[in-house]
Length: 22
Picture 1 (cartoon, rainbow, N blue to C red):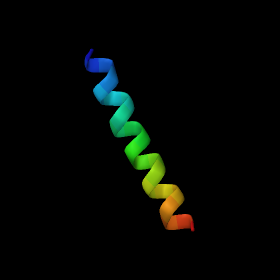
Picture 2: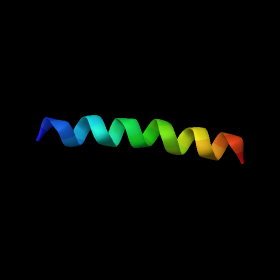
Picture 3: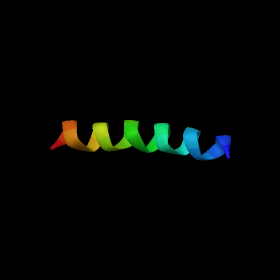
């Protein structure tokens, strides 16, 4: 269940990178 928290944090950084690129 702790793996889900790591994935969410990883996706959060990815989304921020895409938003900044736009």
